[in-house]
Amino acid sequence: MSRKWAFVVMVAALFLTAMAFAHGDEQHVMGKVIKVEDASITVKTKDGVVKAVMVTPSTKYMKGEAAATQKDLKVGDRVVIHAVPMGDMLHATEVKIGRGPAPEPQR
Image 1: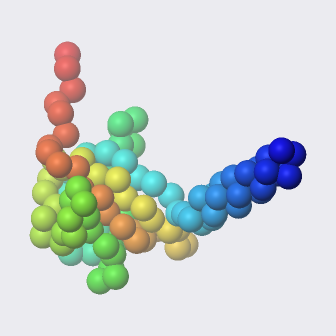
Image 2: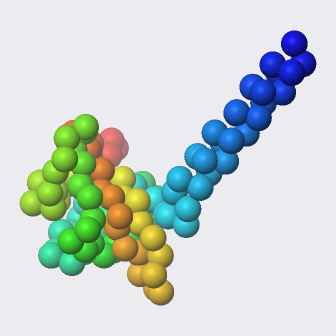
């Protein structure tokens, strides 16, 4: 039984290590799109911080499980952007577009 347990622990450790390295040095920007330009997307996070993220022709776009393009992205959309820091800027590797516009804050 202890040999089986050791195997399970080893597999779990390998899985967790792979998950930790899956995103490497990527940062995640989550929030509401406030501006879309050819070379960048500007997002206002839940904390009210405004972040501009550069996009390139290799940036992947997803809407739900379907592939999308930057043209599918609209002001007001919720996004999660996976980006790598390069110098003082973030460069998007993947933009995940929410299924609907961000809800308006309740007062």
